[in-house]
Length: 254
Image (cartoon, rainbow, N blue to C red; front, side, top):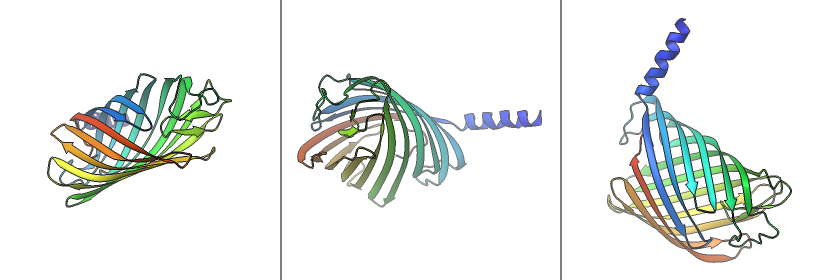
């Protein structure tokens, strides 16, 4: 009985300290051609320290749900995140999606599986953000295991990185590095580098862009211009635009 009372008290304490975060985002990219919109809701629970964005020495746990769509692709995702300290986090989760590509940029969909009504993904991610004065650095490393349950005997197009996955399933490794500089409270400039590679059916791609960001109280506009290196080792010019609206950030720093 005492244990039950203790658990109930702990649960109410966590709920009292919980904070909700919400985000809406839209992206458009010229190469590989693509766009998406997403909505995300999360709930964070303090583990230790005092939540203060100016003195980010606190830890928390977060659960989140996300819906993402680009008309041809529709995905639902759930995740659990642990931040031992607010600027370093580990997360894991899973998603289910369907894809209805008849044509897929840089893929022969007669040979490679572009369509699937049952795509399952499991992922693990580590992320970190550091800042010194006006300079900041963000690093993300993510492993995603993908299976097309209805296309198990066919190699597939991995649209997350414009790569090809092994029949039966494969694992995508994504590395993202951002180095930025805050010009003012409203404007930032920086450079973004992203490297993608498949574990089993070895092929890779990468993107390197210069970015500019316009920040307001609850939304950010990011513009980028650079190059995209394909799995055939050819370089193509690319441009992207991202609009992010965060009406509530909760305990998240980044």
